[in-house]
Length: 130
Image 1 (cartoon, one colour):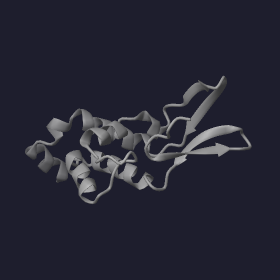
Image 2 (tube, helix red, strand yellow):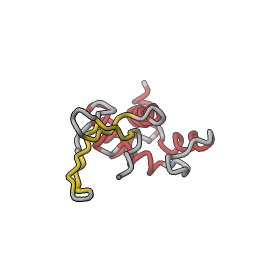
Image 3 (cartoon, rainbow, N blue to C red):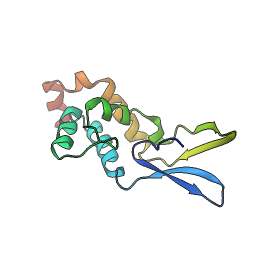
Image 4 (tube, rainbow, N blue to C red):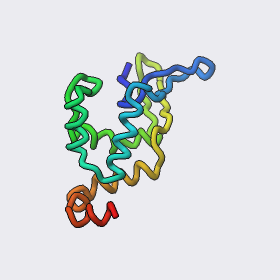
């Protein structure tokens, strides 16, 4: 069975005979904080460093990095744009996702990622924070 994406865990709906990714209470808050930081144009390197200094590790036990956080907030799974389907042992399985962030939060994070260098300029930072 596939590993659930960051912020999710596996669930199974017996009545509907289907698998479902549901929010994982252990990582959900952290995932939401990634989106909040990006939407406020906060430095993702600093966020990763703060997590690492607090001995908080990724689910694989690795230190956090800007690239890890960027890959998380770039993933359309978190706004339920994807359903994953595959054949497993000659059975067709579909995994549904519950949205963890709003479309607005996700889009704002994408804008921040695409324009990171511009948004981190001191003059722009001063304008944004005022």
